[in-house]
Length: 416
Image (cartoon, rainbow, N blue to C red):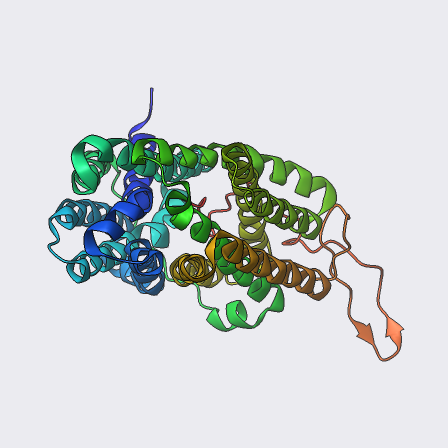
């Protein structure tokens, strides 16, 4: 039987990501009603994720004053209530304004959830696992439920249904989430989080990878041109993410972060290229491979941030900002590329982003003194004059395993 904390945590994840990405499954229908091109329609997703990116660090600061539990409960309830208003929007600008408000409300959850669980849970790993499971399942359920319901309820009714589901989850969170301990003084160190080249590389990987991921899923329903109930089935590809991120963790312990990150990026690019033929089987297979590669890449990069950072709270906030900024700006840029150049143009843009992400990983590898294929990252001892110090040794933070590591200090969660 689920504990109160586990039930509340799972419900929080389900509600948050169901609300955040539900419109992605019905972008063609939204575009048709408001006479939009794909690039403009993609703002239905980007408006919320962009607002979240901007608000995530301020929300983490505010939570220290009002309490983390209060921040989580208020955030999930407000996001669900706004979700009930979105289907009533009479115009597209009104729709986008409500989505911005929903993104601002949602920001309070990723900003403090990991820190809250680290303080409150007896079994921290299990609690964080429940949150991550809720995040992943919520992202998939929100898209599937919206797509399936649109055929008989219209896109407005479908979004209302997701909002009602999320409100039930939010109420469970409010009832069952335990009263939190007083927040401790915030860790300082934003300068180190913004000047370490290894961390900067991971922020780039987060932004570019998420830009590629959201771009493809923003427009895949436009390309398939199928009834929403059938087109939404492509989001079942998300199931590949759990397996691939776990595998990435195991392989990283053996071969090192850089090697596995590069391999995961290559798999992501291969999946994108596989979708080029106008063949439903090839498109489906490509999306599964693409999704698995992205989740693995994100898992390694997230754990790398947690292991590398000295000011972990600051680094976590910047990493989340980069992640959701990539979703917002990159998602719209990719949709605009599809509008201008078609699917092949989008794939060219996406593979270009992934190539830059691979360069960022190589930069991080060189900056941290890692050796591709080595079991762990290495730090070269400083030299004095022309005399080199002792042989390379494992840095304590760099020895932290990657992949599915859910270090509470990182504050990172699985992608939606």
